[in-house]
Image 1 (cartoon, rainbow, N blue to C red):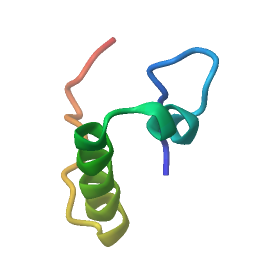
Image 2: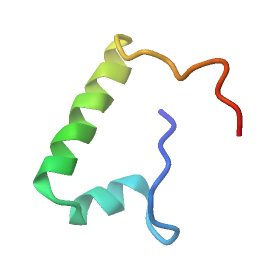
Image 3: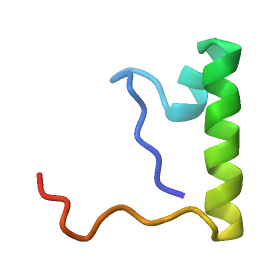
Length: 48
């Protein structure tokens, strides 16, 4: 699963170890949705 850490010097998992519990809960919900295939994919029209 592709995840981008908000910190340049930490992986997403390392960042979550120091994140507040509410942030950890949100990420856990999103991860479960991704793994089960029910999370919507990003917009195909999203441009950088």
